[in-house]
Amino acid sequence: MAFSQTIRAETFTFASLRELLGRAGEPKSGDLLAGVGARSERERIAAKMALADVPLQQFLQEPIVDPDQDDVTRLIFDNHDPKAFQNFKSMTVGALREWMLARLYLENPFQQLSGALIPEMASALAKVLSNKELVALAAKIHNRAFCRNTTGEPGTLGVRLQPNHPTDGLGGILASTLDGLLYGAGDAVIGVNPAVDSVESVSRILNSVDRIITQLRLPTQGCCLAHVTTQLQAMKAGAPVDLLFQSIGGTQKTNQSFGVSLSLLKEAREQTLEHHSSRDVDWVGKQVMYFETGQGSSLSANAHEGVDQGTLEARAYGVAKSLDPFLVNSVVGFIGPEYLYDERQIIRAGLEDHFLGKLLGLPMGVDICFTNHAEADHNSLDNLLILLGQAGVNYIMGVPQGDDVMLNYQTTSYQDAALARSMMGLHAAPEFQVWLEEQGICQGAKLLPVDPSQFLRRAQPLLEGLHE
Image 1 (cartoon, rainbow, N blue to C red):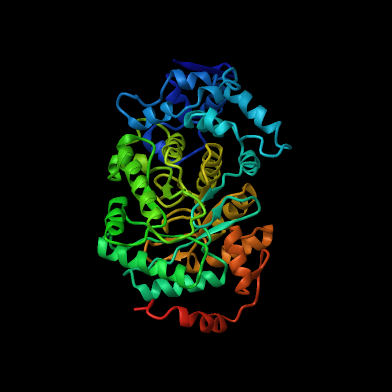
Image 2: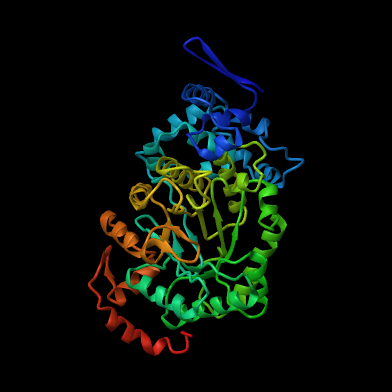
């Protein structure tokens, strides 16, 4: 179906819903690279106006990726809730925007939308929202999840403690972990990206992180962010897996480029649940999956199917939702300036991704980051951190000094996370907050002046054998 919009006697025509979505998006270098973004500001405004008038029903009638060739499309349509959609089926994209903005004064006003909307509808909505509207609407959505502790409670800001090491050195991982704990980081997960994706290395990391958690009695979960198949092999060899990690994308071809399929991910989740039942751990809940995404991943794999990267990101959240995760985060600036060129584009993508994930029912975090060749700096990260804190982001990253020496990119530091909590009066996850206060590390949202040497002396008897 074609769409058209006239602005001052100039008519713009869009051949399909897929083309309209691409032209309506805010500027992204990746969309320009793929040839799907607007070619002028006038065309972008015309596309936004036309998109606002599209009935939501149209997205069910016109799949943007052929379901006969793409299992993500089939999954999205199979999981759509027609009953929940009944209240919105007569609305246009613009009418849904007005309906949501008119309900900002209510508590939990948007819970019914997560089943009613398919990701493409959510993406269309995001394209007609301003930055402040993305913040205000996302702040009204609270998606909780449960593993060894809780994420997503109102008034909290979680932190993934990310103690990566360039050689997977356990001593370095331990030192970074203790440093992060002193700043209150680690409630979302202690998650290590391995330098070597081998069963031996992953098993060593998983066992070491689990021993830290067990011996310090941390109410949190551990994860080693290797390929899902490596983690499963390590689990079968006896390594403890709290959260099972995998990067995912919004098309079948993207997931194939990651070496996974929907059936593999479903089976992996079932194996992890069975593994949990065999362990002597007081699990709070049964969410066991951790997914990372990012705008541009499909284009970088030549698997974008002519779809803009914001819409593909929303479709990745459709995949994640089907697997009931504990954590999901967009690594928003990690793929590089070919896809998100500068601070403006990174901030917009971060706000979009967070809003889309929460709207679709996910416990959504954001890795606020950039690569060293992007037109951005740590002030850029500060800006997005404050915006996402106001938007109620579930969690962010905590890395020593904000510089990941293994992955070679810039993200938020332990100090950034602590300051954000203090500025906005936000706590850690409830169970972890209790532990922090018992240790004298913080009181409420404020860090206390802890003497690191005293903390380390208290911890030393518990840490024998952890270091190399």
